[in-house]
Length: 350
Image (cartoon, rainbow, N blue to C red):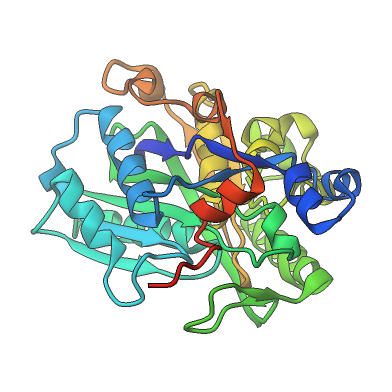
């Protein structure tokens, strides 16, 4: 069975609280926090970007299991904030972990589901026998224009998943996707910040596609929400995943471990993958996990996953890299001025 061989996460230590952003723009912090369900978000350090986050997440995954980097035949990095318009982030990751040169690599873009698209590609390559192991990464240093609604949630972080066959810590039983041309969110080449369709991003964007992919999965494997121990949905805020989980029939207890957005913000391509990682941090052998990502534009990827005995074996050391909970602990808070400096919102004359 093709599945997850190891995983790792990286989240910057810096944070800014939603009320601090609201203070600058004269907004009502209580209304925003109550509406989004987000209290603070991660902020990259001055020398951190999607490439450094992807490298750290990949290194964390390799620390948890003895893996020969030369066995990694593919690396795909999904992001909408790659540091270069023309130069792949995936090659940098491959070089940093020692997987080059006998590998294929590419950067993926599909808004917030580019990382899970990489997961599906790695699954196909491993299953076909073309490669023994592949790494799929979802990472972003998400953008939000000053004063825009996105600024309250657009965060930084990423997760890396090593995909392989045999002795996996979690089998991926099935995957399916639901995709349409729905322009709910976009950023043209050369523009610094994305634009969005406001409430249009909820439905027919998020809710239509997440529910569409989820129901395709239920039909494909003959399951319902009661068959799963955990569920993870893309989390642009805290309200959307809770609403879609309830609509599909999942409980708060099923989604609680993976719902990290209130303390993290929306890490875009990393969001559902960090949520899955947080769930794997506490999962036990035999647990079944339902995952559905979402990317504006628009589409969703759904996964049916079963945790195996290998997650508790000596071959996999969960304690060798920080858990999501540990990465969220001990934050360093910034005021808006330092946040703007970290995010490059202050443009210096050269």
